[in-house]
Length: 518
Image (cartoon, rainbow, N blue to C red):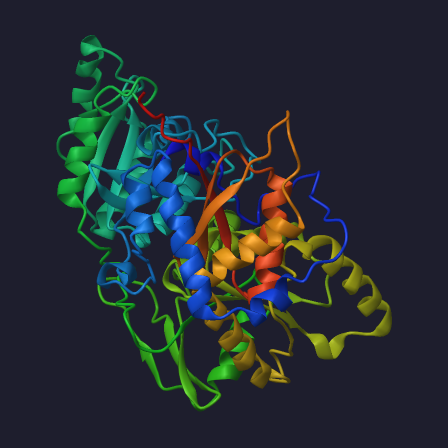
């Protein structure tokens, strides 16, 4: 993706001030309704031809050729292989994560109490995509450190295809390192041993001492400087399968896939049991994993739905310390495999920071979204008043998501889930014809032009929908559109075309006119 694209990228998590406020009313919807599809396509073709006067790159050409990603290609539903990075605190795991990603995303200090909302990252090496799981940032104390590090690593290793064990080569083998190695031997996953902080040839002798762990050849690297990381990643690619064997559910066709997510004790299990009832079709044991059977095929609204990974990684009592880490990892694993997320929120308690965080994970995953307010039957008038205020304040950014009020315990209103799921998925799959999209943009900009900035007024030259699942739009422009104006366009896209229940993304490609030779 070109720099100008990423610089102009906007999604609905991008909040800010200075929203564009249109003046007066318009008749965009009425004009669109009166427009003939054939006329709209002719006008769009004319706008498309006008782009030939601008400097376009290969990506632009591919996009404009009509290539469309509907998310249904064979590879789309095979999950990328998963690489877990484990090791005790302060060996440089997060620095190594950032080095592998080529950007600073992971928090690089293992400080007790640091909140880590995200533990998985999408990465690529030599064109091959994979998922990184970072186990940094746990709370640690002098007494229980060995057990806790091993427990945290164990959660991550269960969902991994291969493991990077990072050891500080300058310190050598510690008791904590040995505790992790013990666990890795039980897990029977391929392990690549990494000796970090090897900044020069002299220190390579330190890394050689790591043979003593019995995990084969140690790979000496410097996460800070990048030394040896390329060779290590080449080795990782030899070990990782093309697609994840652990998470590898074949997701082509079949029943629509639903992730039921929410904070612990919000009622997920109760709702799943109530939905399954005696009508549960089958439990799908996942091959090659020690987890409990997790995928439930459930009959709802005369159709079969697949509730994916709802049980998640098997919870062990001694993992209580890593509860947040565990919950986040399980949520992300479920979202990876789903098409639509049902976020369960308990109405008898104040919306928590964890609720909002899980909701943000769902939005970032790009899945269709339904909000299910549980324990509605317990709601009294006093709590209802405060709840509406909480929804206005904390959930305003997802006002586009269908809401269902239910009781997981009694099954009250469970039948209302199906229309909400159908609506969200229909809009998640939706594609707007190019002619109609450009007619919409033309009418909108004519009625509400972009504000003049520094004597210049950027124009939208052409718009196209690059993909669905979720819908993503690309606007070719002559200049940078204000974030507030992009939010205005996104809002009006929703009002005009629906898109209830799906995140939508509006990207920008700023292009300059081709210089003419005299």
